[in-house]
Amino acid sequence: MLLSELYSSLRRNGANALVAFFHGRRRRRLLLGDVLCLFSSTGAAATPKPHFMVDYLVDSCGFSPAKAVRDLKHVRSIESPQQPNSVLDFFKRHGFDDTQIKKLVSWHPRCLSLDVEKSLAPKFRALRDLGFSQSDIIHITLSNAYILNLRFDTTLLPKIELWRSLLGSDDVLMKFLKRRLRLLSCNIQKCVLPNLSFLRDCGIPESRISIMLKQHPEIVVLRSASLHALIDRTEGLGIPRHSGMFCWALRALYRVNEANFKAKMEFMRSLGWSESEFLSAFRTTPSILGASKKALQKKMEFWVKEVGCHPSYLAHRPVLLMCSLENRLIPRYRAMEILKSKGLCSDNCNLYTMMCLSEKNFLKNFILRHKEEVPELCEMHASCCNRSGTR
Image (cartoon, rainbow, N blue to C red; front, side, top):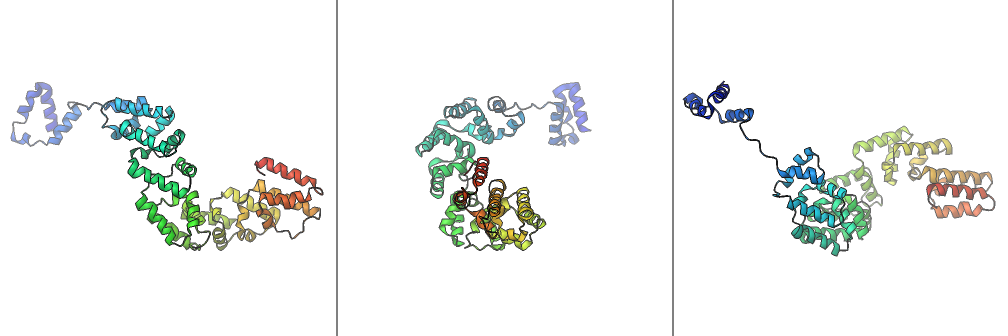
């Protein structure tokens, strides 16, 4: 009621109506919030002018209007286009193309407010001095944009030096940086070093920790609580910490949560394994968790229906389910059948041993040895090698 009266009075008498309207005691008690609502609804309050960086993000960086508005909070402190222009020019001079610059700014819009001479240029020079090429630096920056905000001498350099020593080479370091692993964002003192110390305290030999680092460093950058839980989960499945399979199981379980682990176990039960057989297979070949259901089913059907093996035979030799069906299992089984038909291979030939031989030893012991008696073996093997691209 009060708002409608004030609105009508304003329309009839203009601003002087405000004085008369608030003259009475009752009307002086009108809440300030109601007045603000009135001015908002009538358009009397001025609409703030959009920050120029909204248009800049759209026009110069390829942002959508909605994203530009969302990311304005990161660049609101910028006072003129000269600042972001200098950053974009810097990236172009250092080999970034337009697409890469757009990705970088999209992931890390705050970089537009960085000082080129005091922050970006010294950091890029230091990376070059460490031996990284221009292409390496582009990959590092695109994969780990947050490093642009890190102090080089006190934060970024110690992290690079640590990972160089742990991984053994810049090539390995670059491989993981390109995969956007958070190697350079994690806290060395609170995360990496305590995790490494904990793994050693678990009784895992330094050599195995080194192998795990070079293949799956993401495990070492887990939060300490998560790493402890992962180790407890691995032990709970019957793999002791001193086992040679322990690190491989850690990696497998890191990628497969408990629900998916149970789903894979139920799937293998549908193919003829018992729960205990599945757990036994996992303990000896943890990588079976990463195999697709389709591939496992095709291989199981090959072994059971064509070769005549019982599912339990494979449960005790799960590595046979990890071999390539087209490039190893079928060609070697065909070779064995041909040799048997010629009387050159006994019926007791160990399938497991035959399938697990290296390609070089299989070629020597089963193909080249019988080259004169069974020349078609060489042709079949060569055909398989051509399909797989290996020898």
